[in-house]
Image (tube, rainbow, N blue to C red):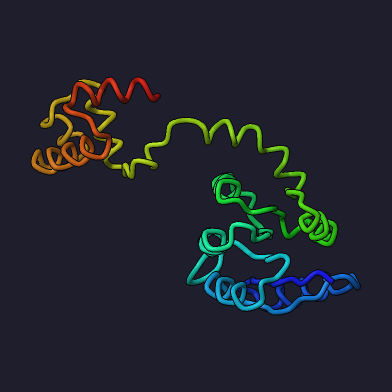
Length: 207
């Protein structure tokens, strides 16, 4: 018997998923949860064979819950089920180590996916599989976000690279020169660079 935990903030969806899964005599749904914090608590309590979980939920997302669970239980089998085929979600799901990512519209493939994950396979819906090569190529590109560079800080970087002075940047962004100096100081510290010349070179190296 496969023991499953379902977490979805729509109680009707959770109940429907339970009905679908338990139509298979080899599957038992041990508990239902409504958000990521429920997932963390219920996973620790039940240690299910598979955690089937939505992504966008109140209080704590499925991705955050999956990250927390996989940190303490690296062998956890987590299958994300969502209405969103968002590239960012899929890439993060792959990076944190979930075993599958299915769209709720593909409910007919849910039971086969459960069995596949339990047998050690990774499962991604056909629509998602077709997007993976492009998404993975993009994810390998340089990311300013990984250095915690904000959108406004990136604007400053771009204008420095274009050769503008602090005064010109301040005018372009409708900010004070003092604010631009502060931004520049923070940017250099985050990127571990010495001066604006290095910053300009860095920008063009990572376009």
